[in-house]
Length: 112
Length: 117
Image (cartoon, rainbow over all chains, first blue to last red; front, side, top):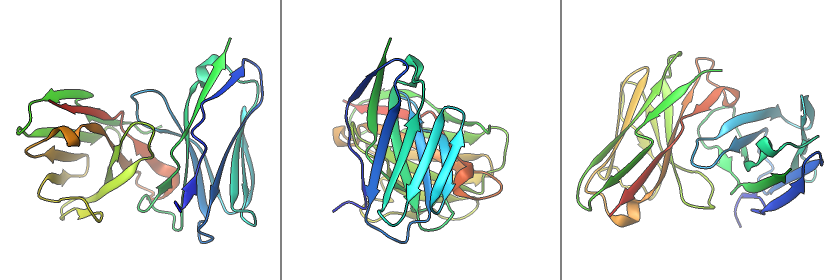
């Protein structure tokens, strides 16, 4: 079993919809959780960074971490066609770039 | 935010040749850089951790003699794929830790797509 599981999609939603992206994990020692957005043939771009459980909001994006369920989510409100990309979750035990565990990414398509 | 530049963005080479990919931190000093490989619809797989002025640390299963990493300065790390073969065709991405050195300051390059014929 992979440490981080993420449904690859694709997920297609109409413009303006609320998007919910999720990852589950098996390692209860993970404490740092990140969401990255990756456009086709580009490097990942950090969207959200959270520590431990709870919610974090940044503009149209909200990240949730439920450590008891080993489940993290990224919500995108008022989705736009420019949000079409692959979203990768990543997590680690320590606050270091080493040993980041990535999900496979969920492909999102927002249609006008 | 900080910028990490990766060059070339794509390269095609013949089997048996060597290819060098550069990763530069443009506006910050990166003591630590990471090299990943990403196959289509797969997650990023860490290949090696590159520390300025010392030898890279390779992940299990990654051939250090095939994937040569040099981190000669605080702003430049290079990955050389030696004697490349078609199975080395992949998307190679570098990342650099910012000066604060935590995962919230991990910046990725644009990636380099290698195709070996």
